[in-house]
Length: 341
Image (tube, rainbow, N blue to C red):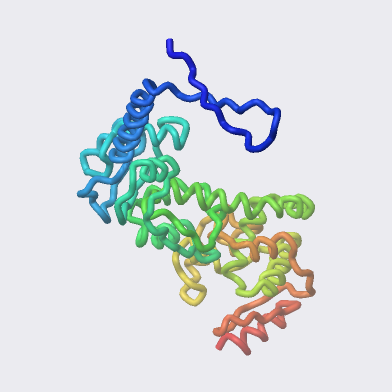
């Protein structure tokens, strides 16, 4: 067994103090230390090498991770396409990053070479690297019209699936500007827009309860207001008129539901159209239509919840979309003569 060797360290000019002794490492241990350090450096070098991107990394290539893919399947696919050098290093980075073996399905774009840990981090967190697609769904737009808009810009969006899956969600998909993943499906869009509606309506629920009306009635009324008036002030006034008509037992006699039902504007409606048997016909039926005719925005929802009280019972829009109000039917007839030539 090696005996420790001590080296005497002088203590300067301080008299009466013993020398300080520093233990020295036996000379025979130096080769072992050097060997161990060398092996550690080699190991680190090997790990760094296999962590680095391959020399023939396919820049600008898009990789699809299918839903339900295992970590092993993903690492094999990446290795075969020269995106990673080592499956072991990639899988180690993946587990270290996410804490498990789960991968996020979707398309991933690698514009430039990236090391295995960077790639693992992106796939673990679902960072596609693909620019989001900006889509604006206007206030009042129906689910069918929204499906047409979305299908033009989202390659994996199926309009027919979206229409079928959102039949009971008319009015409950919030209209605004969204930034969707280019790989967004009909289900993805439905979930995002539905969640946004829930987020927007939650702060208004106490007001809806106070109003004595149901959420369904408020959404239906708001969807009508989106088509009947353009400004919040007019929407609130029209809201007051329509709620008053319902209270008086009068039919609403609004044309907006016919566009939802038949795709016709007010000027295109015939007497046959106005006599059609449908839960959306507000000329033949009293009260609200059987469902929303589009997806209302926040302004129309607020107008439906808190209508403006007025003496008016009738209104009409001229060719410039200016609304003219009337207190009785005689005034309304006069407005027709004046503004609807």
